[in-house]
Amino acid sequence: MRVSPVFLVVVALASFAYAQNAAAQQTPSAHSSSQARSEHAPVLTGTPVQRRAKIRICGSEWEEMKRTGKAFGMTWQDFSRGCFARPLPPNAPP
Image 1 (tube, rainbow, N blue to C red):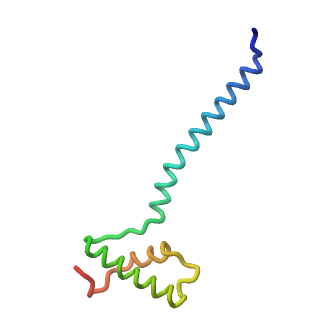
Image 2 (tube, rainbow, N blue to C red):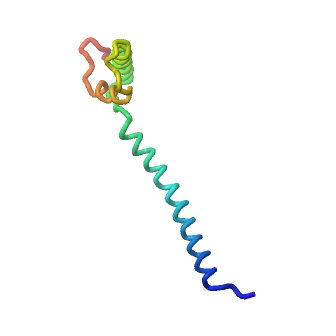
Image 3 (tube, one colour):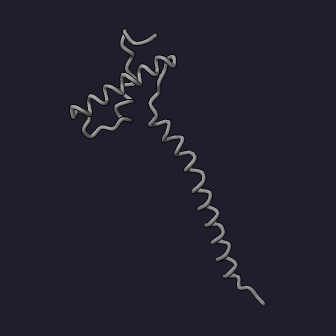
């Protein structure tokens, strides 16, 4: 039985396209998820006690904004990025 050269080219191209598609699906997902996480994750600094205090303060501010309607169109991620960047008030834990 003789195999046509056209058939061999088609099979080779299909194999190449399949391999490229598989590689493209694996690489960006790992990279983009870590990149997306670093772009959206708010950064908290300080001691664990200070970080908890900042989360508590920002959380109560967020709840108050939602209750009064000032948070309309805003997400927690947007708000927390700005809130976590502010310094702790002087009466916050050490």
